[in-house]
Length: 99
Image 1 (tube, rainbow, N blue to C red):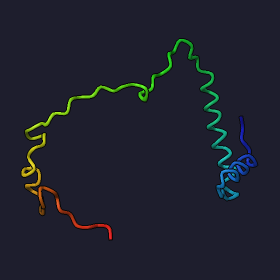
Image 2 (cartoon, rainbow, N blue to C red; image 1 turned 180 degrees about the vertical axis):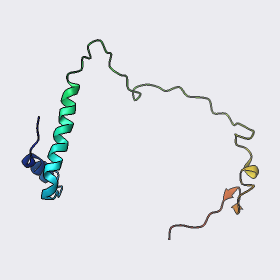
Image 3 (cartoon, one colour; image 1 turned 90 degrees about the vertical axis):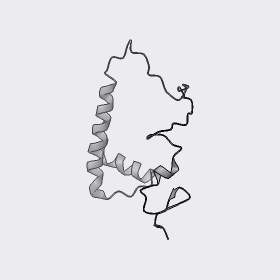
Image 4 (cartoon, one colour; image 1 turned 180 degrees about the horizontal axis):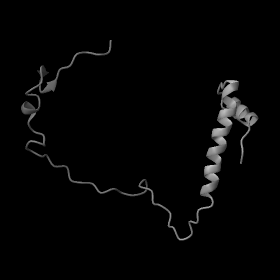
């Protein structure tokens, strides 16, 4: 399926996009190329290929929440902020960047 300049102009108008006249022809070629690629996908034999499952309908495995102590865990707020230039109540103090 080939898309011409007039179709691009109509779709741009319907989508309320202001495309300059010189961009209509290149856009028509790009969209035609995309549609040719999609048409190639229709030629692929997918008989015997099971559909992919979606993770939306699955219940993902959850791990138990455990407080980990040690160099990679929490529970040591003094050690976490030890090298910070400025802290307050175990929080990093940074300069305000938004007025």
